[in-house]
Length: 477
Image: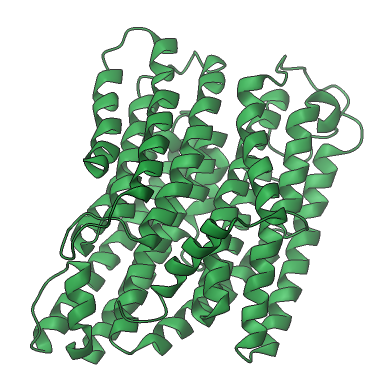
């Protein structure tokens, strides 16, 4: 019952929101949906697991992604009420139902235990988020939308091919042909190894495009750069987490088949390449939203490296998934406020933000310190755990490269962030009239406090839950 409500309630509100004649009333449906969704998600943690063979059920990996996505959506939904008041010229008859459909699709993807259903849910997130990227309705936003649709559709098609290969691996190995995850894990030892390996590679490439791993990331700078800040937060913290979960389902099958080495090597390779490419493109990046897009590519690489190393690093990756999603929420919401205050997102036109919007600029500066792994924020702890795992696995050269690239990212990102927030405002800049308000700074402030709290203290129930999620990727279930 709880699972059905989590998926269907946002859809029902999406249908209800369309005919409402009052724009401001329609926007309040978002925090209503976000609050109820988070409460139902918390309730789901306490419910007993469904029997094996269910198409929709909750395990530790799915609940981890669902929990962080639900919390992030609630914060973004509260922010959206304030944001949409400034965008009355655009209306909200499209953005509100699309956000609700997006939430429903994220939920279905997190709870799906059937590869076909998972694929359908991830594809639905693509369709629901495309109008959100186009919200500003200008030449750049439509270009970003089409690029997003084209590249993610190609990726999702490759993922479908990977699913078909996994099914054929079962058929060729004489096992029962089923895409239900429990059946796949039970029969994986008898699957045809070449077909299974080919299937995982296509799954990795396909869902990796959605996740934004390099070199499959090229939609990210455009989409994140042109979408509203709250949409960027949901894409960077929610959508990428769901795509990562889809890859992890493939890793589970490979682990059950006894072929985890190939999966880990592939993840390490794409992870290092993503981290290196992001470090290069973050140097002297003048567009702050594109800067955050490359930061997302960087952290997807960190997640891939953590799971690729295994052991303690996998635990660190699960923890980093939470920290990355929450911190990206801080950054995108804060930079959305700065862009509103200056009517620009370019370094040459945004200076002295601490003077014009001190709270938003302060949140952005703190978010930068958090996302670059500065103590005492949560990402420092998760990245340090991954680093310990790399050393513990006997890869000192990889650990050295990891540290070097993180240092480059810190310097490259810091040069842009400090220039935006420090100093005097540019001469002749027109004042847009925007000032910080509770609805616009409250949500990112809450997210920042959570990230700070996770860096200072990791509750034992959360630690055990992260360990349970990590264990699903280490052994056959």
